[in-house]
Length: 197
Image (tube, rainbow, N blue to C red; front, side, top):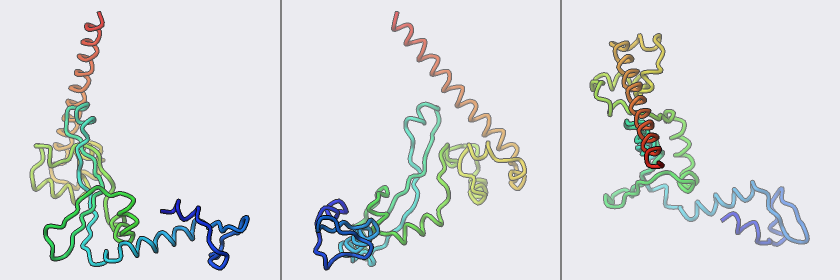
Protein backbone atom coordinates (compact mmCIF):
# COMPACT_ATOMS: atom_id res chain seq x y z
CA UNK A 1 0.00 0.00 0.00
CA UNK A 2 2.79 2.41 0.91
CA UNK A 3 4.67 1.60 -2.30
CA UNK A 4 1.70 2.75 -4.35
CA UNK A 5 1.49 6.05 -2.51
CA UNK A 6 5.18 6.84 -2.96
CA UNK A 7 4.94 6.81 -6.74
CA UNK A 8 1.76 8.85 -7.16
CA UNK A 9 2.50 12.55 -7.64
CA UNK A 10 0.27 14.88 -5.66
CA UNK A 11 -0.81 18.42 -6.44
CA UNK A 12 1.21 21.13 -4.74
CA UNK A 13 -1.81 22.12 -2.65
CA UNK A 14 -1.66 18.66 -1.04
CA UNK A 15 1.97 19.07 -0.04
CA UNK A 16 2.28 17.73 3.53
CA UNK A 17 4.40 19.37 6.16
CA UNK A 18 8.00 18.14 5.87
CA UNK A 19 7.66 16.91 2.27
CA UNK A 20 9.80 18.23 -0.57
CA UNK A 21 9.12 19.09 -4.20
CA UNK A 22 11.31 17.62 -6.94
CA UNK A 23 10.59 18.32 -10.65
CA UNK A 24 7.06 19.50 -9.79
CA UNK A 25 6.23 16.12 -8.18
CA UNK A 26 5.70 15.64 -4.49
CA UNK A 27 7.97 13.26 -2.61
CA UNK A 28 6.44 12.38 0.74
CA UNK A 29 8.42 11.75 3.90
CA UNK A 30 8.10 8.37 5.69
CA UNK A 31 6.25 9.83 8.69
CA UNK A 32 3.50 11.18 6.44
CA UNK A 33 3.24 7.82 4.64
CA UNK A 34 2.85 6.03 7.97
CA UNK A 35 0.03 8.44 8.91
CA UNK A 36 -1.66 7.84 5.54
CA UNK A 37 -1.35 4.07 5.94
CA UNK A 38 -2.80 4.17 9.46
CA UNK A 39 -5.69 6.31 8.21
CA UNK A 40 -6.38 3.90 5.36
CA UNK A 41 -6.19 0.92 7.73
CA UNK A 42 -8.60 2.56 10.17
CA UNK A 43 -11.03 3.23 7.31
CA UNK A 44 -10.71 -0.34 6.05
CA UNK A 45 -11.02 -1.89 9.50
CA UNK A 46 -13.34 0.70 11.03
CA UNK A 47 -15.63 -1.92 12.58
CA UNK A 48 -12.71 -3.52 14.42
CA UNK A 49 -13.61 -1.72 17.63
CA UNK A 50 -16.64 -4.05 17.82
CA UNK A 51 -14.51 -7.21 17.67
CA UNK A 52 -13.20 -9.26 20.56
CA UNK A 53 -9.45 -9.57 19.92
CA UNK A 54 -7.03 -11.55 22.08
CA UNK A 55 -3.31 -11.93 21.51
CA UNK A 56 -1.66 -14.89 23.22
CA UNK A 57 1.28 -17.27 22.97
CA UNK A 58 0.77 -20.86 21.90
CA UNK A 59 3.45 -23.51 22.50
CA UNK A 60 4.30 -24.90 19.06
CA UNK A 61 6.28 -28.11 18.64
CA UNK A 62 9.66 -27.66 16.99
CA UNK A 63 9.79 -30.83 14.88
CA UNK A 64 13.42 -30.60 13.78
CA UNK A 65 14.79 -29.88 17.27
CA UNK A 66 12.50 -32.48 18.88
CA UNK A 67 13.67 -35.19 16.49
CA UNK A 68 17.28 -34.14 16.88
CA UNK A 69 17.23 -34.07 20.70
CA UNK A 70 14.85 -37.08 21.20
CA UNK A 71 12.52 -35.12 23.43
CA UNK A 72 9.64 -32.75 22.95
CA UNK A 73 10.81 -29.15 22.36
CA UNK A 74 8.32 -26.31 22.01
CA UNK A 75 8.60 -22.61 21.24
CA UNK A 76 6.07 -19.95 22.20
CA UNK A 77 4.55 -18.46 19.03
CA UNK A 78 2.35 -15.34 19.01
CA UNK A 79 -1.28 -16.02 17.97
CA UNK A 80 -4.36 -13.87 17.74
CA UNK A 81 -8.00 -14.86 18.19
CA UNK A 82 -10.60 -12.58 16.60
CA UNK A 83 -14.28 -13.06 17.40
CA UNK A 84 -17.44 -11.24 16.37
CA UNK A 85 -19.60 -10.76 19.47
CA UNK A 86 -22.82 -12.75 19.17
CA UNK A 87 -21.54 -14.99 16.38
CA UNK A 88 -20.00 -18.14 17.85
CA UNK A 89 -19.17 -19.54 14.40
CA UNK A 90 -17.01 -16.64 13.23
CA UNK A 91 -13.68 -17.19 14.96
CA UNK A 92 -10.26 -16.49 13.46
CA UNK A 93 -7.32 -18.08 15.28
CA UNK A 94 -4.03 -17.56 13.46
CA UNK A 95 -0.35 -16.77 13.98
CA UNK A 96 0.24 -13.03 14.34
CA UNK A 97 1.43 -11.26 11.19
CA UNK A 98 2.36 -7.65 10.54
CA UNK A 99 -1.25 -7.04 9.45
CA UNK A 100 -2.64 -7.85 12.91
CA UNK A 101 0.11 -5.83 14.59
CA UNK A 102 -0.85 -2.76 12.53
CA UNK A 103 -4.58 -3.45 12.64
CA UNK A 104 -4.73 -3.67 16.45
CA UNK A 105 -1.68 -1.64 17.58
CA UNK A 106 -2.94 -0.76 21.08
CA UNK A 107 -3.99 -4.31 21.91
CA UNK A 108 -0.76 -5.73 20.54
CA UNK A 109 1.34 -3.22 22.50
CA UNK A 110 -0.55 -4.12 25.69
CA UNK A 111 0.01 -7.83 24.95
CA UNK A 112 3.77 -7.26 24.58
CA UNK A 113 3.90 -5.32 27.84
CA UNK A 114 2.14 -8.05 29.82
CA UNK A 115 3.44 -11.21 28.14
CA UNK A 116 6.36 -13.18 29.50
CA UNK A 117 9.56 -13.83 27.59
CA UNK A 118 9.52 -16.58 25.00
CA UNK A 119 10.61 -19.94 26.29
CA UNK A 120 12.14 -22.72 24.23
CA UNK A 121 12.55 -26.19 25.65
CA UNK A 122 10.63 -29.13 27.02
CA UNK A 123 7.45 -27.80 28.68
CA UNK A 124 7.00 -28.95 32.26
CA UNK A 125 3.51 -30.24 31.53
CA UNK A 126 5.11 -32.69 29.05
CA UNK A 127 7.59 -33.94 31.67
CA UNK A 128 6.19 -36.70 33.92
CA UNK A 129 8.51 -35.88 36.87
CA UNK A 130 6.47 -32.82 37.83
CA UNK A 131 3.30 -33.09 39.93
CA UNK A 132 0.33 -30.85 39.07
CA UNK A 133 0.79 -28.83 42.26
CA UNK A 134 4.50 -28.33 41.47
CA UNK A 135 3.55 -27.21 37.97
CA UNK A 136 1.51 -24.33 39.37
CA UNK A 137 4.20 -23.39 41.88
CA UNK A 138 6.91 -23.40 39.20
CA UNK A 139 4.74 -21.35 36.82
CA UNK A 140 4.35 -18.73 39.56
CA UNK A 141 8.16 -18.56 39.70
CA UNK A 142 8.30 -18.16 35.86
CA UNK A 143 9.81 -21.62 35.41
CA UNK A 144 8.15 -23.20 32.38
CA UNK A 145 10.60 -25.74 30.93
CA UNK A 146 12.86 -28.55 32.10
CA UNK A 147 15.78 -26.40 30.98
CA UNK A 148 14.59 -23.59 33.27
CA UNK A 149 14.76 -25.97 36.25
CA UNK A 150 18.23 -27.24 35.30
CA UNK A 151 19.54 -23.67 34.86
CA UNK A 152 17.87 -22.17 37.95
CA UNK A 153 20.29 -21.03 40.65
CA UNK A 154 20.27 -22.83 43.98
CA UNK A 155 19.46 -19.52 45.73
CA UNK A 156 16.27 -19.08 43.68
CA UNK A 157 15.45 -22.78 43.89
CA UNK A 158 15.63 -22.70 47.69
CA UNK A 159 12.24 -20.97 47.64
CA UNK A 160 10.64 -24.07 46.07
CA UNK A 161 9.85 -27.20 48.11
CA UNK A 162 11.82 -30.25 46.87
CA UNK A 163 13.71 -28.20 44.29
CA UNK A 164 17.11 -29.89 44.66
CA UNK A 165 15.70 -33.33 43.81
CA UNK A 166 13.73 -31.85 40.92
CA UNK A 167 16.82 -30.07 39.58
CA UNK A 168 18.82 -33.33 39.67
CA UNK A 169 16.03 -35.10 37.75
CA UNK A 170 15.97 -32.28 35.19
CA UNK A 171 19.75 -32.44 34.68
CA UNK A 172 19.65 -36.25 34.33
CA UNK A 173 16.76 -36.00 31.87
CA UNK A 174 18.56 -33.46 29.68
CA UNK A 175 21.82 -35.43 29.85
CA UNK A 176 20.05 -38.67 28.86
CA UNK A 177 18.30 -36.90 25.97
CA UNK A 178 21.62 -35.48 24.77
CA UNK A 179 23.31 -38.89 24.97
CA UNK A 180 20.47 -40.48 23.00
CA UNK A 181 20.80 -37.77 20.36
CA UNK A 182 24.60 -38.26 20.25
CA UNK A 183 24.20 -42.04 19.90
CA UNK A 184 21.80 -41.56 17.00
CA UNK A 185 24.29 -39.25 15.29
CA UNK A 186 27.04 -41.87 15.70
CA UNK A 187 24.78 -44.60 14.30
CA UNK A 188 23.91 -42.37 11.35
CA UNK A 189 27.60 -41.71 10.62
CA UNK A 190 28.49 -45.41 10.81
CA UNK A 191 25.54 -46.29 8.55
CA UNK A 192 26.63 -43.62 6.05
CA UNK A 193 30.20 -45.01 6.02
CA UNK A 194 28.93 -48.57 5.49
CA UNK A 195 26.64 -47.43 2.69
CA UNK A 196 29.53 -45.56 1.03
CA UNK A 197 31.71 -48.70 0.86
